[in-house]
Length: 285
Image 1 (cartoon, one colour):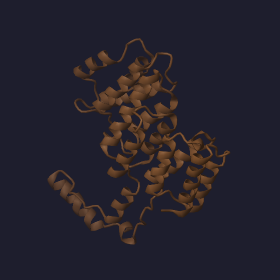
Image 2 (cartoon, rainbow, N blue to C red):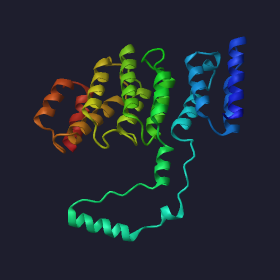
Image 3 (tube, one colour):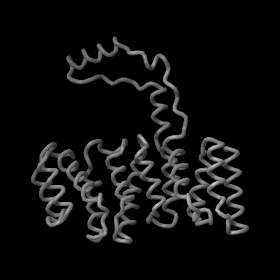
Image 4 (cartoon, helix red, strand yellow):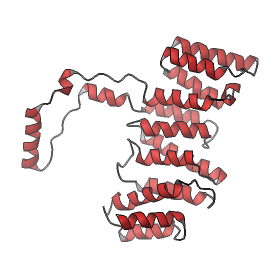
């Protein structure tokens, strides 16, 4: 465990329990410790999550949300050391490349190539693993599926950065977001950013396409919102996601088939800003 961050966390927690007032120094102490230590390890990440959920006085200090998001996003999807590429990894293997090209011409497909250990380690360093995802889900759902704005920001940062993560983590994020929107009938710009990061981020489930499950959740979110309580960026994101689903999802790449047309008719109100934006995108495709 990193000494400086652990000491600062212990001091913040003690002050919260004994005094209930940190005089605005809790966030500053934690930030200074993280900068001095240079990292947040797994046990410290758990304690930060617990501190946030406990509504300790430090959580109400200015700057807490920024610190929380930066520290945990770095821990889960950025700060682990990425192994350096070896000289051998960087040297082109022309013989292997020519051999693969010859196989592709002869057999109509490229042969599989084993991933190098350093390449795999580099990817793993930027991924949210199974255990980490389970820890996040447990912490963020401890008091129900509704997320606060700081947690929305954290998830958005993670899905924007991580190159891979378990599908269960993605499913939790979409479900929790839908529950959050349904509670207050509003979708704000932070929530729009989270949807965008999930369906269009570097580890999006279907690549360019948007799956039917994702599209159905986006439809549900759209239906749950009051008409005048949707962020300015929502109609554009909605239309982009739905057009990617019907044009690049499984079934009829590049065209809207009869089943997809019926699905659109059932789920996208014709007299809505979302429908107008979607029509423009589909006509331009």
